[in-house]
Image 1 (cartoon, rainbow, N blue to C red):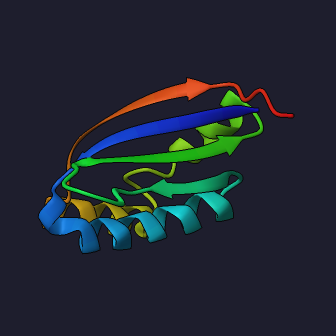
Image 2 (cartoon, helix red, strand yellow):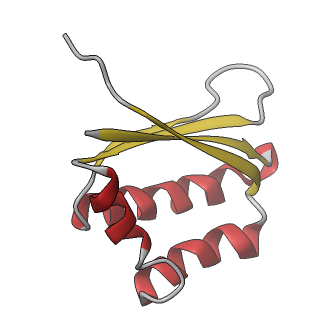
Length: 101
């Protein structure tokens, strides 16, 4: 299993747009071979950070999912939320392997 951790810098004034964006991606990951563990959003005080965690059975399965970016209409529409609202200022993606109890 491989877990992708996405560390976002978001526009706090566009949190509702970011939540719409996040809901769409949770559904897309879950319907395309992954397990989305959720988005973690600012809860208290001013913050421009958010995290997303989702897993795939293997890096190969993740790479298969990535082939849909920019081509599948649902993926394009999900990215349009981000692009038109400006809710994501930048992000970094890293891959982890979970150590579970």
